Length: 393
Image (tube, rainbow, N blue to C red; front, side):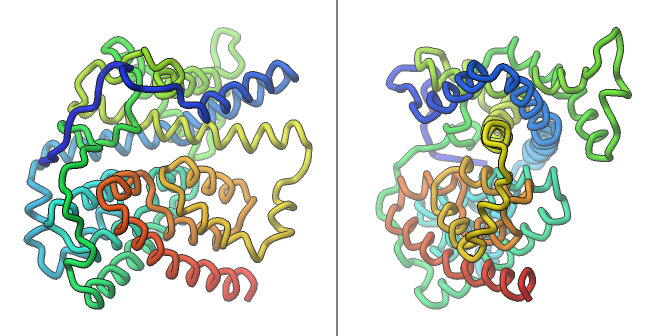
């Protein structure tokens, strides 16, 4: 895979404190200080995010990146020479869990190799990193959303290419580097790393994967592996692992002088760690937002959304316009918690572009805006179609 981009800086020079992230961390710390019992909520949420989501994400990425390295091929040339299959291939790359496939298509579009319909197809099909969370918790629903996103993305991409032609809105500039030149992963996923940290991370994740599988099959894992008077060893393991993921991703954003990715980006393990930490961190924040809100305010959040049920799919679609995977992970968490209906999840999945929207905005802002607007129409139609004919039929 070839990617004409520059390497991200490995040190904190030029970076600033991520103020929204600092505010989130400060709020969590204040919550625990105000009510020490909230610490149990924090531990349980971080542990659940690690065992139920992070382990699944890591296992999936290890397999995916290993296969990618084993079967090396030039994806740019494959897409450029695909002819009529270009849009379906772009939709398939977008439908893959995570943002890597969609980012590949967006960067190749700027190089003049792909059509605007291909970009629209991949941005419509992608659910971003939120797909990992949905598949881990509800695999059947996750598969349904992936197939739906692929189908809608392919249909809209083919229609737009037919309507406007393949060169519609193709940008002139071709030199906006946003990906690591060796791995092709977004800089947003970068974090604190060292060989010792990465080894410790792997020591935690491998047993964690087996714990996550056991939890998925409804085994009481704490009872199965309890020893030495430790009542909840799996919960403790998950808390330590989740805290490590969060620390490696968040700390350089809170203390900019710390180095980011001091070891090679190109290895399968390093890429897996980087992407897993990013997803896990946002899942932790989403879980904590929900659990701490319930803990402190003692009210049923589902009743809040039920009072504006008709607007919920629209709100989810609008949230999908926000760049990045964090807001979309929050929407998926709300769906899995029963706060919003599947219609809202469908609308958000189709309208959101995940991390792929960042390079799209930077390299081809007009095309990114038009693609987002175009994807809103099928998102609203399907979300409200499901709302009226399935949920309220």
